Image (cartoon, rainbow, N blue to C red; front, side):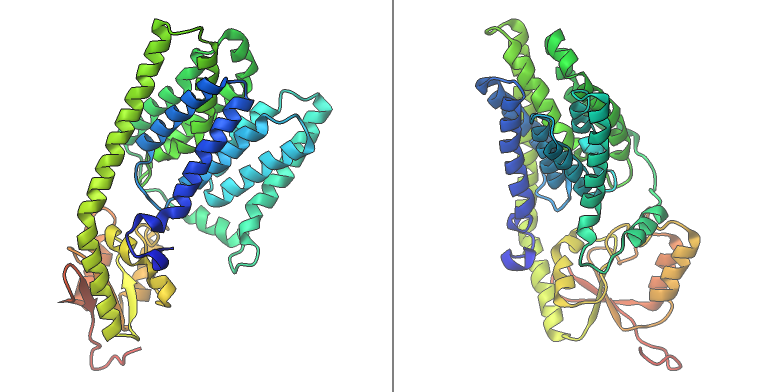
Length: 403
């Protein structure tokens, strides 16, 4: 997609944008089937759009829009009559979500619990069995026809070591979780009992997502796939209101404030992207020029240069051998892994050209251990190539033949 439409353009994230729009349509339909009137369902969908803009204003490349789509489909499945098809659909959505993100099954928890209480004990056991089988099939489906094995993927996940939790993000996530679960207090008691399982699932899963969203590199968008359940609760609460009352007006004002805040975030993100676009284009052209002059160059991208990674990640598609994204090389965590990285890439001149922007590729900082930075700076030297692009290369010593 990036190679087709150009680097840095919103069209590179078109699949995620389509997933977001499709999710809104499914949420409206699921809210209607879940018992909300036409007007309240539209009201709830608009509120959902406001939350979406507030929590995920960036046109990014994360899996969250697709997790939102899967949780929306899961909510829609809860409105079906209890059947084998319902159990299989919920399990498949949960499995695919887990394949997209290890914690992805968490976002289907409220839907899975909502479909369980309507069944007799024997039927409930059959439902659990079918959803488990479908979940396993969905989780394994992405590995079909690839060289990656589930055991290898699990071994990689087991080796990951998060750098830490951030209190500011945890507070923001907690406030957003309270906002998303608050509509459960506004629905009538009878509806509250009927939605008790889904609400319980929401209250159980949201705190876990809040913690995961506070880890290094995460954020409030980890709560994004829970939006469909909030939309249903808002639709049910709005349907129960008889005309315009101070309470209804207050709810509408909260939704409008969320939408306004979301629009502000989206406008700021668009402004920043527009301001960055000329520099991104110049950087892109500098990389193209470098590759045209060095067609056989082995190129590596530095972990710290997040924007640079985004602009030239298409090097993978150009057959270049090494792309290191931020965190993927150090999150393995153990000192032996750091030394292994140094021994493999930074102990001898292997002909790699490291691309940097602003700072050296392994500039000392929180993400880069001092040993890695020192090893890099001792071996590589900088040369400029176009505006904003630095190419770091090394020269073999006389007793060290080039590889």
